[in-house]
Length: 239
Image 1 (cartoon, rainbow, N blue to C red):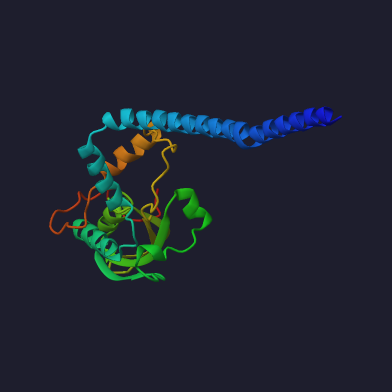
Image 2 (cartoon, rainbow, N blue to C red):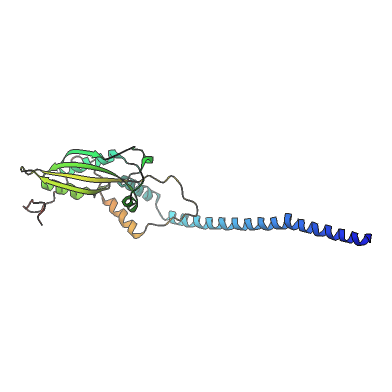
């Protein structure tokens, strides 16, 4: 009888040892192997992503990237940059010959980059925040046409939201403009390794080429814009 019990004890001990080995050795080993396999897949994907980025960046000149970035940051500044607004408007006024009667920035708030308020639906569509300002200028009709014709075609990009024109009996033209200058803070976080780096699309290349052609008039003082001549008729509402 004792031998029978001894056989059960031995069998139970072997079964218990085998079960413990499965739970404490085999299963953790399987998990470790699976984790290692998953890590290898992650590393493989990251390596492929980095290889793709490296191949793309090797085909782009560092100097070209720097020059494009400087141009884009002068068109849409990384902060509100009120001085560049004043300098651009003053330069454009000098080139066109108009006189600035007054200019005011509406609700500038803090001028720091981090002070950007919540974007409106229009700003989200454009992809940048806007800083509205108003401008009152005077001059001849041709000078006004030259100014208004170039105000949204200069390196510091502006958008005209309203336009009010009046002509005095003396022939002096006065224009009241409501405009907006765009700015967009630089990203503060670097994308992950898996984040793709895509080349510019044809549409983006076209926009960049257009911005590059826009003149930087912030330092303009003496050179004049070619007046826009429209015959002898100076009625702004005539067709």
